[in-house]
Image (cartoon, rainbow, N blue to C red):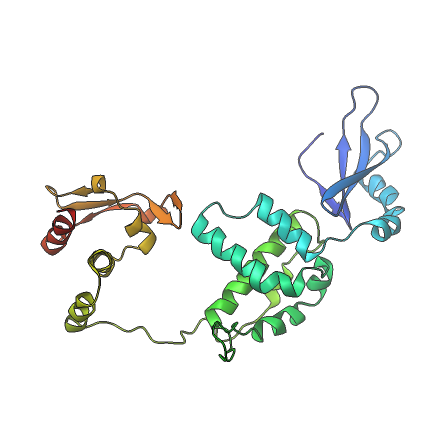
Length: 279
């Protein structure tokens, strides 16, 4: 194939294909469900420019649009889970859970192209999302603004891949048109513990939980980073703690960000807490 640029043509794109014998040929390709289809338009001797190839392809446009299997949202999700979901389990796990429990039951059989044509319907659905009662007699309540924002973010990412995989012919992600006002505001204010409250909290915790709370509140480490600590990460002589891994569920991996991997100085109180736990 000569050149890497592909020019989209409605439900397809035109490429120039090299043959071992004879002149190159112009080929029209298009996405059909989870696979690709193609049709040879003619040789470069017959169609001397890309513009001529486009005009030749226009004859097949209606036929392609009528015969192509338009992807459903469920097909898009299944391909995304197979090919593009993040490797980090702390990201992939909640995403799978949200897709299976909240998004797929509503949109699985809907065509991607129909969702793209009516982002307002998706917006209204997100705004009306409610929690699922966990206890008998518990009433559902409006889903937290942050959770609604996460729902939109996942849909936005999926539609980025819908365009990448040519399920959609559009220049702008339709999920970017969804407006969720007030979702960036905190529902509950941040509560800062006083030193007295800090020690009261510690007095009610089991020893292993107490150590995790001490590390979290004095270093700012994430719980996944605390669970990933090993004794080799602690240098009692230099009074340092090295953060280089995280544990989420049964999976051990790298820290969430590059900046999170660091060497922290340890206060004498933290050194004593760790030495007591090791003993």
